Image 1 (cartoon, rainbow, N blue to C red):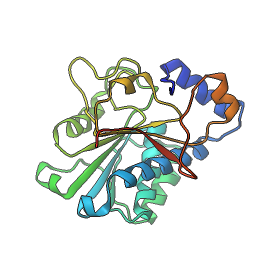
Image 2 (image 1 turned 90 degrees about the vertical axis):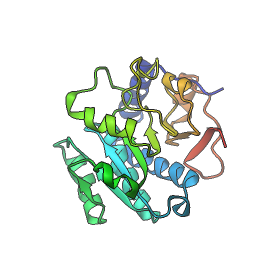
Image 3 (image 1 turned 135 degrees about the horizontal axis):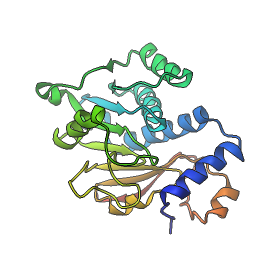
Image 4 (image 1 turned 90 degrees about the horizontal axis):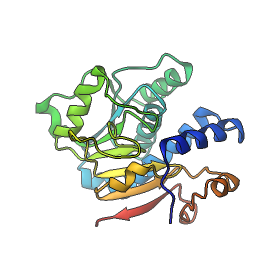
Length: 234
């Protein structure tokens, strides 16, 4: 059975990927974002969405970078994508990722969609916070958290449902209830509390030695796929 990681284990695996295996941040981000786009396309066809927009809500860290990559690949797959990126990171990697989205005519919003615009959107991709998140949610992000909790648009969370405790799951006061969770590298402990429709694992980049060292027991990916379905309620 696949191992569910603690926050410390997830952090240490990332550090080893960078330091021992010499992966770069942008390399892993590209692979992660691509696998997320594949997982979304497998479960939500363009016809099913009736060509409605997918709004990708990006945070300031690596999870947000995964979201920017995911938005770009979804656009290449023929989906209508929009990015909401309220707090941008002033680093070359993130400048490049946003530039790539703009050059592909992906709108980058500074303001959240208004309530009378919700019917334009078929999915929300939650790429705000990753496994390094610690409570509480900063004031800047409360509006987008409320949008994801209250809009009734299905939410897809990348790696961690934003606002959840990485190990304990949804906060006592209530949180995002994603319809899909795409775990990256290996699921985190909070994924045991996920009750949505689809749970995928993405990011087919873990070296066998590293998998063995942490006893990850990763599932077999089908053929050349970069994501694998762990659980489905359909």
